[in-house]
Length: 107
Image 1 (spheres, rainbow, N blue to C red):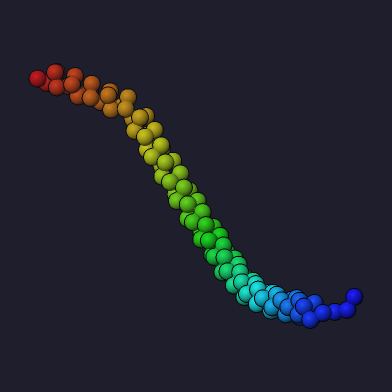
Image 2 (cartoon, rainbow, N blue to C red):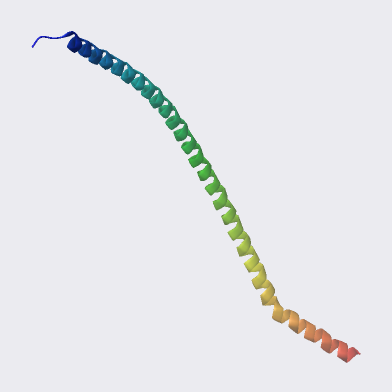
């Protein structure tokens, strides 16, 4: 079987299509390299943002703990004050009763 002009032309077209396919693959690989580079930059920015957010969360938690600690101290002070006030209540009532008695006696 001898090659014919048609066979040679078909083989040339196949070879040329292979070259075009290789060219398109090289373009695709180049775009993928660019995309990978952009993804690396994005990942670096996200990592930086994550670190910043982590730092801010820790700072916020520290402030929250300080505020809660201060609030707990204030609650203890108020509790002590209320206990003292409540402890004085019977004495105040007795004094009021004594004043009423003295007023009746005087007048």
